[in-house]
Length: 369
Image (cartoon, rainbow, N blue to C red; front, side):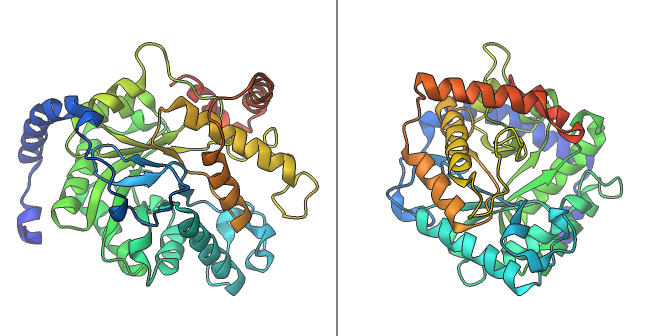
């Protein structure tokens, strides 16, 4: 469909399409995972027989059981020359050491079979777009330019959001994105229904134009996530939500009831509670005396999340090849924790939730999902 025709899609026509899609989608979604085609390893990007792969909802994609979060917190330990301060987003993305670090981490991910990277800031989009040049077929890329998406009041129309996608793809030299998952306000219910409809219109248009293979959103508001999945089941393919080491599925009225009904893929952010000092005692340096214990804590958290079998994959940020290897090892280790491991995890989770910094207090709302 041409751009001119796309611009003629009004809200009434859009809602009519969504309603029809919902009616059709319910029947298809009820088949859920049972209708998922068998895994064809020849079509899995960066397939490694030592890695576990999971279907990403109804997309038809198979992604690694642990994927790569776009954030590079503490990467100053690997590329100190790229930083003038402590803010992880303050990295000079043109710094040679920084670029080599990100390239090497992606390379190691591909080698161990990790095949999805989630980029949600403009620096992440540009950095990973560059690092994937010449090997775009090795990894799926999730795209969000949060600075010019729903968290910014000037970018809450379909037209503005589509300009953001086009701008990001141009700057990152991308012909397409595997997943456009728009970042919403942390309290997503602050968005009006009209704003959500505009967002969904943008996502649908990007699909029809072939710029995004699949679409979804990132949100921290469970009731709003559930409403969007149920209201726009043919547009929402994937949700990116918190799911940390202490998260558990509610026995009744869980968000995952809607996720399963409509066969939605879910990537879990903040698996380590945002890098809590209650989880990691060291500074992530390879020579830190706490490195071995921190590796064990990271694997313990990932094993617990994988055992829960609620989400498709956690997406931790990783700053060196060693951390990539540690996550691959966690996938191979037993899922069920023994009594000692379970007790350690419980203590770690309780301390994490009790000592969250003020800007992460909202993670307490994700203990029961």
